[in-house]
Amino acid sequence: METRITTKGGFFASLMVALLFSGLLFTGCQSGVNQTSTAEAISMINAASGARDFEKVQSLADSLERAGSLSKGASNYWKGYAQYQKGDRNLAEYFWQEAIRVTEDSMDPEDLCYYAKSASYLTSQQCRQAKYVASLQTALPVISRLERIQCDTTSDYNNLLILAGCSKAYFDKTDPAATEMLERAYQKHQANIQHKLSKNAYRDAIVGIINVSYIWSYLKEYEQGLFWTSRLGLLIMEYKTVYPDDKEYIDKQWARFKIFEAISLEGQGRHEEAESSYQDYLQTKFSQTKEGLTNASDYLTVAKRWNEAAASYRTIMDYLRKEKNVYSLANIQRYLLKKYHAYQMLNRQDSINLTARQICEVLDSAITNNWRMDASELHAIHVRDMEIVEAEARSARQQQIYTAVIGVFLLLALLTFILFRLRMGKWSAKTKKQE
Image (cartoon, rainbow, N blue to C red; front, side):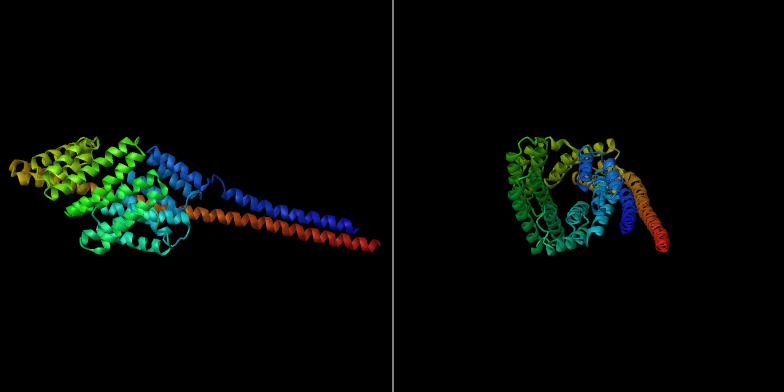
């Protein structure tokens, strides 16, 4: 008799375990639907980025975050990167700021990676727009935290040092903290190159030194500019020795080296050497691009070759009209105002008046376009925030459903147990009575 009771009890215990396990399995299956590992998620995004399909990068970053395969920090970084590549700089800044915000207290290695990366891209963007106060406000807290937790050996940290140093130099060219930051970053880049011997280590260093060369030229500190430009040239020659087949990249960076060298030499009054460097620059394919023409114009302005500078700005404006990209405040500042100045130096009143009219015509459209962009960006941010709220609400509802399902399973198990105990009690009483 005892054996039968134990068997039934064991059967019931097995039933309860099966019911509970089924509930947990159901919950686990539901939460794991369509999930992808983090490594697979990053691989998918990298593939889309390599194909320059930035709409897909944006979509993947969003959907993979919702599925739980991508952290919020990683998702916001990639969305910022996608917007940057699509030309929406303001929305890119918004996503990078979000990436910094959601990772600033985390110690997770992945979060720290995207924390530094997002800060590096955001600070670089702010420096390009001459927002040097904002760049320092972004970079310095991140640099301080990365140093405090001993995460100061990455290329992103090194470039943050460079960008902060450049920003400090903008406000005070003699600031020893600025030169110390720049030198420390250079030495760290060199250490990375020696340690990793990779394309990325070289490229990160080259980008960093380009920023330093540019800021000293911009500040008309031509001796410092030539010192850093020489370092840039050595890095590019090393890269060419190790990766000789990367011809397009080498052409572009060698062109940058030569134009910075020409500007620094011209600024020091070394005209013949400057002209030689400029002629070397013109031999590169990069010199014929829109960016290349802009760099040439910077040299021609320093050299006071106003006719050539004005002609170069005319060509740039033609490029912008073809791209339908002329109507922006940045283009007015970078090209039309410089073109106006070149004609002023030539004292060509007709051209001065014509350029002034162009500035007025474009300015109205640029301001209107800027308002539209701001409205569009605010709408996009609002839509994104609403999507986050809806996703969180959906997740909460799913969690409530899963909790309810588990509760039902537990209740059924409890009822089954009670009924089983009642039946066993009756059966036991009947058995004793018969005995």
